Length: 99
Image 1 (cartoon, rainbow, N blue to C red):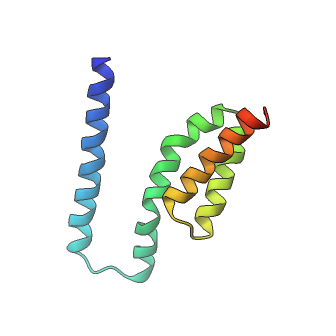
Image 2: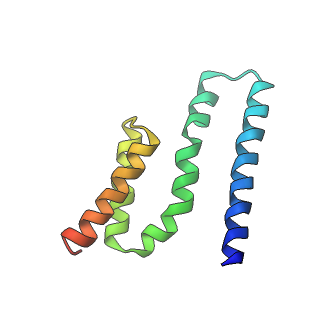
Image 3: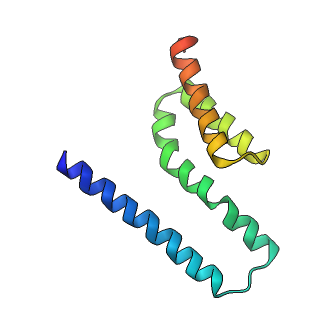
């Protein structure tokens, strides 16, 4: 239990430092339009990298939920909405449709 707490605290610190260093870096450089587009996509990329292995282990339902969330994100939906829709898809497929 204590080990999990240390891991969560470490992850929180790492996430904060990543954001703080990113802001520091951006404020000190002139950014063109393409660089800003890439930077705006980073939260989705990081979330996908963290969740994809777990969801893929869920089999077909996990892959479908990732694809649905990615499609929404590609259409320009907010990261939170895309993620919630992906998890909603997973829950519906697993518990209602019994996939």
